[in-house]
Length: 502
Image: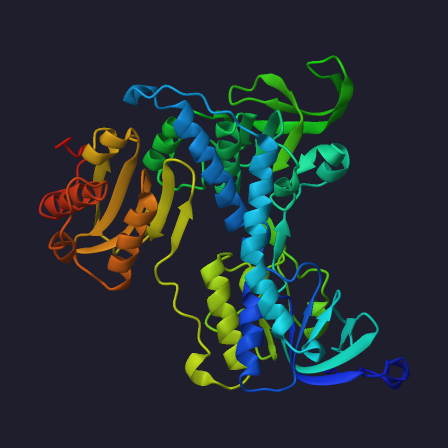
């Protein structure tokens, strides 16, 4: 996308274009790869530029390595906590082997992507850091590229508060670096109780690491239903040491002696607890899990007329296509900070790759009318559809809340995982599900069932006409649906409902 200079003087400083292409894709993660493959179906001169690993955030530092660590942690937890079943054992955890398997299996998943990238013709890909100059040309390595259309899919990176990296030095970890540890640490502070923080804090705890979790809010996983958040905290408190509502005043490193008297560098956190008392944590590492930010602020997109807000989010973004205003620029995946989820990035990349090739049939992102999020801690935390504050903010919605506790739910109790609470928000006028929030065993499956119901506009009656096999944890969903149905006929009043044990 060539922008003409504003003056003859500027024209004299122009560099010579080395290549012209119809489409340039910047970034080779999930969104970028999908956009590249789709665009190449109709255009021969498509180029993809990537800085760093030619893989995806999910495979390299996200979904897959974290779930591999969780899988190991669950094995250890089951071995160490089966006394109530009459099974007495103690897991012998080999930290080096745990981390080696995480990386080995991660490489297995990455090999599939590697094979795809290697199959692309050499002239269609460039390894290097791209920058869009004031002429609207892409500078990368020694090349100057003119592209008719640009797809930005540069992903995201961990957000680090100011000066933390300098103060913590080698004792600081992020979700991008933690899986490179050669062995399990002895102690770890996790800052941030969002999805990443919760999952990793619990996993390392179950693997025998002394973990302390900090969060400035008195809630976890960004839960917006107070009852669900409080229940999640109660369930997780059984394993995790959490300082919620704490304020971190300072962080840094200091010299400290280990158990054998050898001196080394350790990290510290000075903080105020929820009661305002000054305290200090000391340990081996600090895992900063304070969210992620997109990577477009240094790309030069402002030279194309793209405006960003104070959190690097592009303005004038068409959420149906990823297109920026009237520009031939598409920002997709984590780079646009819309919904930083793999399936959304996949859809957005596919759409953008179709749009630039004027394939209108496939050029629209599948509607995200049913928001859906899962935190893979134990018990799992799931949100589907509208949140409770969104519902309460709409004066036209007359709603009820159907509830079920999993504390005494049959199959949950059989499995020894009986801690949790499900809220289903039902609309009295339409007999439809508006949304749901839960902390529950097997919540990922309950969430999928509810997402299908909301997406396909199924009524509560339709849902209850569906068979629920006994004994399953999903019977708890039926109990909550029955509670919604019951309250459709009477004024809403607070109450609790439990699924029986048989």
